Length: 337
Image (cartoon, rainbow, N blue to C red):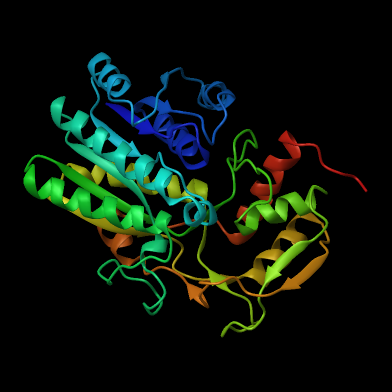
């Protein structure tokens, strides 16, 4: 089977590609490299010991997309491509709607035209909004606080409508919680750019001496230690869920949705102290105000993924912290001061 991975050179997409190759699939990658590195393709082939086709391709370019589908016998698509920075989406929303939604529409048109009837979509826990109680369940009402989140909700609805209208089309929507960690080889991981918006890249930059301290945004949350609680999941566990979802598509009708998380939350302070303990690093901490829109707790009910996909996480918070730092040490200059 040939699986097309959109955004396949990105953080999540590259790990999915390696997992698929290790499970006997052939893969094709398309990426416009606006937030990824072309060298990742070579590194993926090095890790897996297998070659594969890759295209420098933007989903919004209908001519390029037609070429990819025309030249390859694609069996299914894993759709990861999309802009994903929440503050950026608030400041400049139009590119987010153009890229994320416009690109998805082009992709689905090509799938229909070339008889590709299976898609796995990378969604996000951000679709649960601010008002749902934890743990989040797949059937809860959805809302968003930013354009990025709204693009996920809109694409989910597009997939539901599309699979209703096109009876042969099947979709698995995977709602990610907080992926962190890196491949155990240390050769691919989350590349830190500028001042990160997510905690683990921020931790790694502070540990590498690129930032003077780790900023804790709020200690007045209604949690055990006062800091926000999130469901951190190792990227290597996350990508195994995609293999399970691909296998499940053969037995689905229409669209099904699955949470991918550990099913338990860890606080910001717990993640910081675990990172320090596992990696033998002491970080300077800075307390600041909580960010607008941040909620007390976010974690998944993962019983549906367990029951229907036969999937559950195996790696610990310690593994996530160790692998994240291992990737940074191997690939970036680290201050020894």
